[in-house]
Amino acid sequence: MPVSGLGAYDDQNIFARILRGEIPSKKVFEDEFAFAFHDINPQAPVHVLVIPKARFVSLADFSARASQAEIAGFWRAVGAVARDLELEVPGYRILANVGEHAGQEVPHFHVHIFGGRPLGRMLER
Image (cartoon, rainbow, N blue to C red; front, side):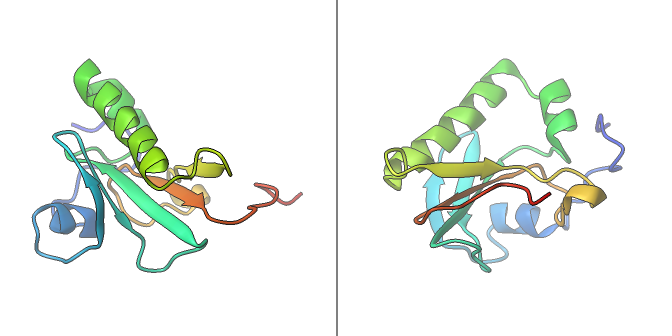
């Protein structure tokens, strides 16, 4: 059972379907813990999504239920993607939207990696 106010995991969400190969994606990275692919509606020159391969609704769910290996493997994958895309030196942003107020659209924990240009302030006042 997810540890989240977002409800139970939906096996028909778009990321679950991408992981099963039912929906195509432009893969950037894959290992036993994570899958990364280009966003279909990029908000920056580089906009990649990194998702854990296991069923987690949110960061709260992931941090409470994932094994130490899954947590380490996921965050190592995020770092590997940023390095592979050569974003380390110019800089990049990692963003995780959780819940309605943050604009989470897919009920599968994921992070966005943005880069390829100066990104400016994160939040407007």
